[in-house]
Length: 475
Image (tube, rainbow, N blue to C red; front, side, top):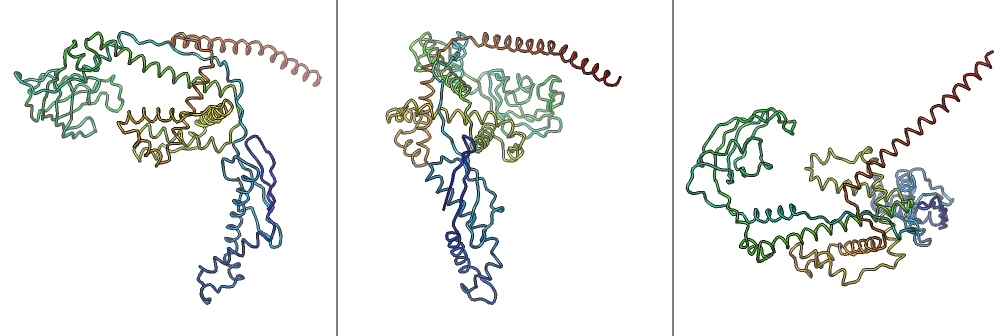
């Protein structure tokens, strides 16, 4: 088998293959022998059908199968001997190939390869980060959230009517416009207007008897309600209160702070909460810097990438999007990846592939590796989040073949941290950055308009000269 390689581009190679007739003949002989053992034809004993009969009846199929086999084997040979880092099967139209008796089997095929990637100019990248900013209001809200989470639901005593501090278990039947409603058990927090199942329901339930049974009411949805499908419509409901509980929220004091386990006093609880918020925000800023470093790396290294890698990335992005949306099967089918959506997703997918290849190149060029200690540290953190034993968690990952993926992610994070560490970082307030971007866009638009106005007279002059020349020719 003779295989020659020609370079089409940095990510494409052309295979020029010639397989001697002796090899082709042997493949055909084997294929017909195996077919003869399994095929059953009237008038012939099993395994005794002449090859001439098999060729007449199944020749086209056998030739196609042998041609496919030869293409695959030559591809493996070329990839091994020429060290091709192929990312796709060879592009060849089997139907166009033909096997001719006594002649070598010849074909050409295009193969996409990863290509040699060298990252350049990745030191001293200019990056921006937002300042750490945890406000007193954010701390207060976080502490208040802790207090709400410590709320207990207690039996209601000493009153007969509902109040805004109650949580009700309801049975609701009726209709909202054309939409039928049948909720045998619906929980409504009379204090949570942002989670109101039907606008106006909380108000209609406040001050009602705790033993409310089969109460009929009508609620009109405001005309300015955000949901177009129900605004302005009327809900006709029959409501019964199945159970009612009052919320008992602890006082915001030192005792509450002790109960949280985060401080002995309310002041210590606020300090601990601020530290948690700052740590969380710092991690988010760190993630943003990594993203910015990767974008800048891609911007500085517009390397070519194989289209098959891009198409895989498009499919993966689409799969992730469907998972994030949590679409049911009937809606997921309507959200299929069509040509228009694929075209829109392709630029981002291309940069995603480009970024992965560049990070791999940087880690190789800079000899970045991960240690067993770093892997154990990451696994310990992940196992703690899932409340699992580290050994069991690691064994599960190893069994499912996902441990290498964790190593890969650690290597990428370590490489990005190196890029960020070598970058020149400027702290910029998000509001100021947005204002600068807006001013830059306005300046660019003004410059474009000015260029257009300067070019217009010249074009008009040229057109006038052409018209004058035409008139002279006519005279």
